[in-house]
Amino acid sequence: MRLVIANCSVDYAGRLTAHLPLAPRLIMLKADGSVLVHSDGGSYKPLNWMTPPAALTIAEPSAEQAEAGIAEIWTVRQAKTDDRLVISVAEVLSDTQHELGVDPGLTKDGVEAHLQELLAEHIETLGEGYSTIRREYMTAVGPVDILARDARGAAVAVEIKRRGGVDGVEQLTRYLELMNRDPLLAPVAGVFAAQEIRPQARTLAEDRGIRCVVLDYDELRGMDDPESRLF
Amino acid sequence: MRLVIANCSVDYAGRLTAHLPLAPRLIMLKADGSVLVHSDGGSYKPLNWMTPPAALTIAEPSAEQAEAGIAEIWTVRQAKTDDRLVISVAEVLSDTQHELGVDPGLTKDGVEAHLQELLAEHIETLGEGYSTIRREYMTAVGPVDILARDARGAAVAVEIKRRGGVDGVEQLTRYLELMNRDPLLAPVAGVFAAQEIRPQARTLAEDRGIRCVVLDYDELRGMDDPESRLF
DNA sequence: CACTGCATCTCGTTA
DNA sequence: TAACGAGGTGCAGTG
Image (cartoon, rainbow over all chains, first blue to last red; front, side, top):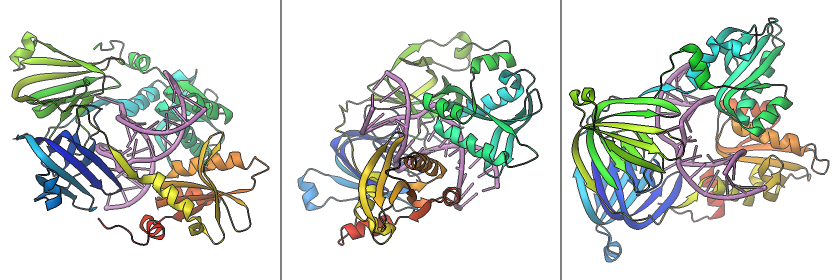
């Protein structure tokens, strides 16, 4: 990894065009050819960047550019899409190189998959007498998160989201529409389960006869493992 | 901005938990308190990060951690959400500080807004005799990208996307449903226009009587300016 | 302030 | 490989 602190201006041309005026910034050049231009604020998204695979070429500035104080023109080309990032370097303030090697990678725990697993195991959270038929029940328009049965044996399709928005309701609606055409399953009720349900989504769901359930992740995890780990 | 190259392991606890085993990485500490942990590959997303506002505290390792070769424990706390990032530093390979100042910021040009502008100007692309009524036509459920009229004077709602997926079709469907209840507008036809339309989206749209149109950005731009700029 | 919709989204999984 | 959905999404615009 090469880290350059430089006074530079940047132009990107690809899916859009973008321009950054002359200012001091960090230019990060990674081993796979990707380039990130960061300022000293904002969150993780760079001001400008190039995705790998990419290649850097360095050229002399034109007379006019040299006049304006530009010392070098760095052009980063995307190998496949021909997008390009042009960095006009006025002054290099620091330039260092470090060997990091390949990263062993990230292990995650949590999120929707875990919520789904927990709810499937404790489906009675939705009501007395509920039972799970199966997770990821396939339909022609995609997998239903959980297919369950209520106390009377009727089918219930459950869509799980961390944050429940209108698109989640639309998704469940598509599943229900299709499943209710199947005489072996119909009638299928719908449950929209999320850690947080937005007002518009709730309104839309209830208007369509879909029940909304707010999930408590910690509570579900507690049921799973009474000795819930504290951080 | 402080740049640290260190052999470290990282743990994040917040909306999920994640762990990175010991390896050399770049730790970027920005002026607003945000922290990014990057490896030497991948695109712009860090392996782990903390969004601003955040604060860093440094602590001594426990006896057990010291035994394992950890020299310092860096804890980054999010001010609002209480999420935390714990960086266990084994060895600092480089540690530099740079004053960058506030960035003048990015100017963008292109994307969906430009597509919308171009199509509104050349709405006859959709068919002989079409005319634009207005862009960003407001409805109770959001703005319709373009409201137009066909050759016979009937209303047409156009939804524009760069890449057309099912959610774009759902969005247009919601608009159409509402607009068709308005006796002054009804009947309103739908057009789903995108640079690229995905198969599932096309199927869904056509099933609902929505016409799909693939837009050629360069061609539209060419109509706008015959001397299309080359980069 | 919360909500919505776009993104040079990125990133994983699956058909 | 392409397509699809989720994201610790980030981010700008709007009511």
